Image (cartoon, rainbow, N blue to C red; front, side, top):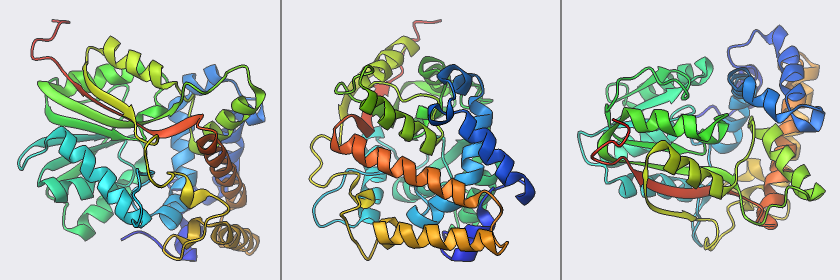
Length: 347
């Protein structure tokens, strides 16, 4: 089960980092980003360090506020957030045609919430690919608690250099994860390589939409806030993702920004005007109480120095996500289903 208490949050900040090193890690992480004078090229060149620092710092906040599945969802009226998250994961499994006995790869698996849900739903064996040691440690613990440690496992690796043989998996998926890649084509090529010919890759990507204007200062600020608060080197346009998939060799079956026809806005849980008992920690009041709690725990020494700054940049990210969603500049669910051809043209 997810860590849900205040002390769990406090002790988890920093992940595998020594507590005395958390403040320094926050300093280094912030300097990568445009809001603090950082450059996109530096973020791309140092993406492994940047993303690892981000998840060491942010994972306990994610679990505290969001649960084990760190992603948004296409949401229907009458659904709770948790119900929509499960359906979002099941949708991927159905689109991929997962069947019992298939070998599946989850690229950028976090602590394995979707991995466990999809494995249970489809009776498949799922391997999670993750380059963050702290998240893998948490994921293994959660697999064991769920009784899935024999069918679900993890590989610690960079998804730009996957240490797995060619043509290994029957299906691959990614949920709001490959947006961390410094080069989409390179990342998709690695996924293409480990996928069996004739099989499919499906994903939800974080993207800027066609409404994004790179010359608009407000649009640029929103994009920078999203990058800062979510450990991203860049947020690509949907068209760039599609182009990268084709360059990697995939055949596109279908693609769509699923946020466009969602009956309930994906950013609703973060909207300051929204209140929900079931998602209380994500509401304005819940976030205020969390912020106050973190500040207090840091002051009395139970949370490491720098914890409140992590809370602050996650708050900034939430603001950017809501504004980006309202203006339809950003989507966390650009969905695509693509296939590796039976005959690999690169051979």
